[in-house]
Amino acid sequence: MPSLWVYTANDSFFGPSLAGAMHQNYVQTSGVADFRALPAFGQDGHGLFTAAGGPQVWGPLVEAFLANTLP
Image: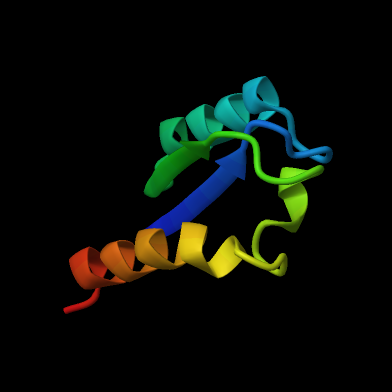
């Protein structure tokens, strides 16, 4: 099942290098993932999905992913 991975440069849980390494490991072990590394968002990008203004950032990414993934 394809997946979408969205990370921000200032995510306090997963830094850019860790996120990239996790994605690389995932796809090297047969995972299918579209990795989107975004610039910093607010004070802590980990809150992107629930923050005010977040849906305007991730919404188009999810919409495009679903349009290209679903039959």
